[in-house]
Length: 434
Image (cartoon, rainbow, N blue to C red; front, side, top):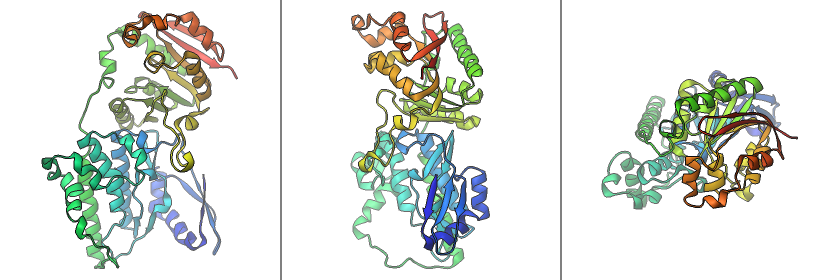
């Protein structure tokens, strides 16, 4: 990834890139590793950034990922103060995830700090783009995915009508919604930044960042459950032997084919994502359930595993957005041909019945995303979960036999191995036909 810098900013950017703390953060992968390729006085400079695999956007993150991204932003801003720098931008769009680790990618967001100014000018943006969306999620039940339509975040007035009087006067909403609205009519734009001593300005900035961190901690979502976040414990259609056989098949298969990058479609809380990561793969895990994805990210982060959980729907993938639909790439554009192996375990019947996607279209999409292997679980129409999804429409899916599945699958994949589970489901390792 190359980035050109205007001549008038080249010297300050080079000083920042070469500073000890920037190099330390890059070594820690808290900031994207960056190299100065070209630098000359009065000439544009050229930076090279390390490319991160599979970029994601905030509207695809779980709540814990939002908290991690916000915490990293505050940490870097506070640590930069001592060396005379400050963040001039504070938006989730400056963050990507490398596996389960948040990485700050906009290295030009740091600038020299006025040592006599007690203001963090990016604070308002941090509130709009981090804190208010988290408030909307925690107190109004608005999905974080709604921020896709709010590039510059929420305003206090967006939330106020949906909050009770009691909520408005309790922390953190009192500080983030009620008081800003109360003083809005008397708001004045300062013609000049206030000046104070270096010691006082540094103290004020640290105090602001500390109080902001307290607000962020108060928005850390409490443990919630959903229908799918406890799926592993409540899956009555799997006996212990079925779980063991399925895990062994996946583990042995991955150990044999050694994929570098794996996509786990319908990953749930990440049991099979973790098996793939432990086999040495970089894993991207898609699931539609927010709480299951959140649990997957927490487990991956706590375990230091190379797993990137994403709230994503195989049947309704995130579209391209922004100006001319070219600002943010679609989910399928980012995924196409990027994975040596795609796992689709316990998801096929949902796509066929609940989402009503034809089997040939599913296999075609699988072929486009995988560049070599796929591990697929076939669920027969007699399966209790399949019948539950049909809801009396079983006759519509009478054609979905295993023979039909093999016929469609074989048009674009070669069957390498099949294992039948005791519950009637079967696991398939297939190889992509070029």
